[in-house]
Length: 168
Image (cartoon, rainbow, N blue to C red; front, side, top):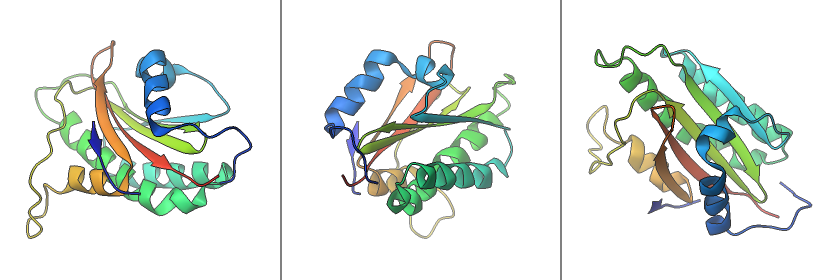
């Protein structure tokens, strides 16, 4: 895990560490398959226009949850995560037809955003090159989320996630 920067809820607030522990106990495979009122999952085709869809779903879900103050940062981060997922899902070495999946989970006062993709290749942060067209994605994820990381999925592939903190 790497630390990074950045609703009104009735539930007792959890610490960020407790949220991350809860997701580890449940497992991302189960979270992605769950039908819960405090989560939203959206399968995305393995194509470039999925980035816009992911941003729209993220903003809409956060607005529905009364957490619109997180929308700008979360939309930026989801753009980077879905862009990476599409880029690696289209690699010739990956012949899987598995979709990319966006998942948002509300863990009051936090929101966990995860993007699952069929690639087993772990994300590797690079020193950002602000002149280049690429290579800044995980730097942006780290900067705009409280924590981020990734987990292997038991079905294959991985989930790259970012945790955001709302206000109580």
